Length: 462
Image 1 (cartoon, rainbow, N blue to C red):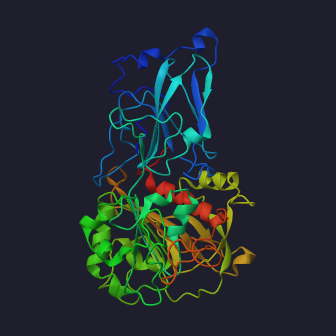
Image 2 (image 1 turned 90 degrees about the vertical axis):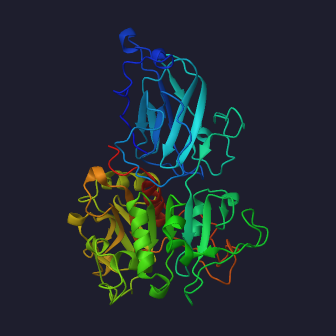
Image 3 (image 1 turned 120 degrees about the vertical axis):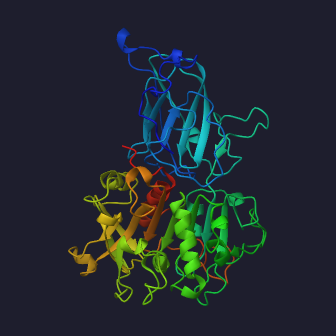
């Protein structure tokens, strides 16, 4: 969601002094510190601080978030406008300046469709009001009410929102496990006919590459329920458009028959309309085209953002990825954040498992931006080179003011220590099968940064 400014009154409403706006106090003229609200925003798990989240006091009720797929640019005004606004820094922290000094002050915490609305009972003039973690953590479910979370006047439901996410499972990765580690409630993880915000799908025609295909008995989001059909999901634009984010876990191969040209074109149209796409390793078919048949089975514009070598040796499992500081506008902040959350012991470097090398280079001239690279000059990388995490905005080739969606390709496998198998119901016992019940690994933290970044508005938050 756009920021509509940073710490000031929006020009469109500056001449209309609302009752709340009129409660802003000129503390400097009194020789006093400013009236501020401070805190740190966390992922739903309550332990991972997040960069680039909007925190603001709205002019008016932000209203309901639209379920329609549409562009969300950082130059757009935030819902309800902003009397004062800040985005969180590399420690997840914010200091909201010039806050109205009064009672029942509304505060919105939002990145993309993740949103929590608060009501601060009292803000004292020319003082700091510090918010507790429980109130500044993104919601894990639609019933996740913290002490200060605003309630709907009619239903009394907490005013929280989550994006709608579709995840296809794969036998070579387990993106669905990352959702649990990020703190999303089990009740929100369902199949495509369930009421949750995260829907799991499986590719029934990927022999040997199919991931988990059903929930375990007693799962809150669907007791033993089977997952939806991934082919139906990604081959149909209206189906895709029901989601804010779609995620494709590596299946160990491209399985091109399950991803016909019509599917590639549907996903392209989805992204062009404002959708967000996150895919790993052998889902490179969506960007680089079918191995050996790119001319007839691929998206020509997407093929320009990076160079793929499907025959490259995949023989170095453990590597060190380096943050791209030259091409990525968020590179420096990404690097600092990785150090702050303990993912980097050497600044700008992340140890990774499950490294892969099909994405040789990105092309900045055509919009391909690297988050993480495998640098061949580092001895540990044994002369291997690749782009481990690639991002580009859509439509490819559009000017910055016309960019609408985002696509991320991760050549590394995301879910460190977790697995996804058709024979093991989700989430699995976690002891060598299914989702590992461990803390986020360094690479999972790196991918968490990119996951929430893909949720955010298109453009720069700076």
